[in-house]
Length: 235
Image 1 (tube, rainbow, N blue to C red):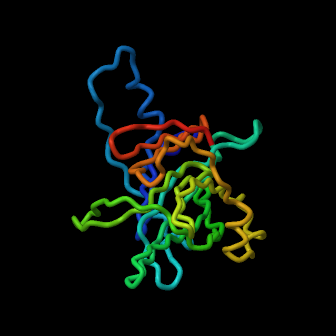
Image 2 (tube, rainbow, N blue to C red):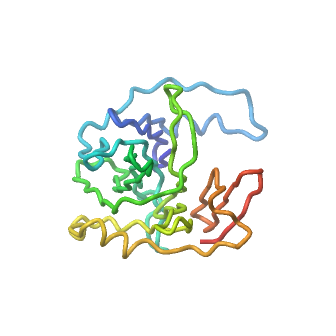
Image 3 (tube, helix red, strand yellow):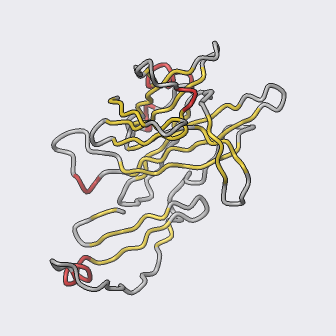
């Protein structure tokens, strides 16, 4: 949901036709009351299809299959940043499974989309493939799929990485600034400069993680493990 001075827009993140539905605030404010009254159904607005947004359809590296993408709002980084001008932060996730070794590598790429939806070109930042701990899930077609265990919000991404030794280490990825002129580095450069380890308590078995949730406003990571225990970490 995107709030402006005149309307509320609902962003629908569709790989084939990203679009927004906008509701004028003048139609919403008269219905606000305390205590709440009966629900009010607003007329369905015509969607605005964002055909002019370039590079919006996931284009994973060769051999990788697009899995999903995570869209959030980027939090303001300075006191003077306009609250209503926060761009959309889009994390693209793709995977490649080696049928011989059984290893699954995850490709992460990222881009920002201006909230004004201007035709300004957007570039993707690609990170080098990572071996990320995965958890079984079911996709829309009812098929069993292993999804990398990733928590993302704003400019931060957290995931448990499987090291070459077989051990698992929690990592934090700080997404780079929206500066297309500085995106000419190879993927390995982004891994070295934007990914760091995250210290975790010894009682947290990283191999048993089933779900994670990130609250970027407070800097808190919630980690759920097999058996139902939940760990709260600061990152």
